[in-house]
Image 1 (cartoon, one colour):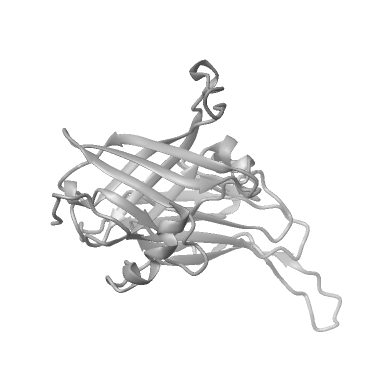
Image 2 (spheres, one colour):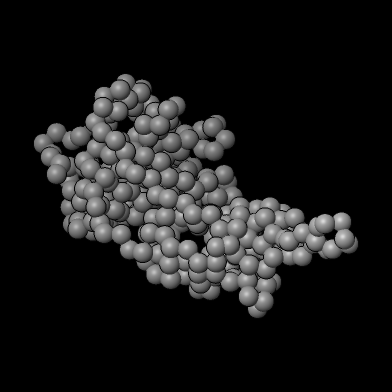
Length: 276
């Protein structure tokens, strides 16, 4: 797929603009006030989140930035336990234990609602916050059979990996991500399979990393495993443009598969299909 992806780059770039990326809001954590002035004043820790209340939309992210500067450890812990973050987040292989350093952690919100949060050490002293997540009306191209084909990341120097997507009967979707391992020493095939809602433009599929195979005739199916890798969400802005967002599980995150979002554009379309 690598050579064909590069050959098709110029053609695909002419098909249209990518979807508007989601926004990220920053919330400062802690910090301190200076005694200053040369009058013997002492620095005092700030036990608050600033701003303590923010509003975002589904798909947006909040980056928590610990200001540091004084020997007081903080973290950010959702009241519903949906996240606990400091030096990374527990759910993605990081460490959400309160920490002194100037850490940054980002949480992406995928459903509407109100999420309260606190610092494990100082929540009882008023170090709390709230995030309101607004629902966003579905826009873009609903998933149809004509979306099937090869898709790739058109960002500069990213044309050597991509997805093969097949929209299946009975509202099922299969995808294979032809990519490489974090060290750049081997190819990876990440498989995705699951249902989708034809009334929406988004599908979130569980992902598995196949490993243990060998080139024929040495291939032995009994040695092949496909441990869970995480999940990938496809969002289609139109028939030729969209985004891929993945969330790796703890084992994958520890192996270097960092979570991120990138644009995807169509490279090929199956003969006999139309979109929309």
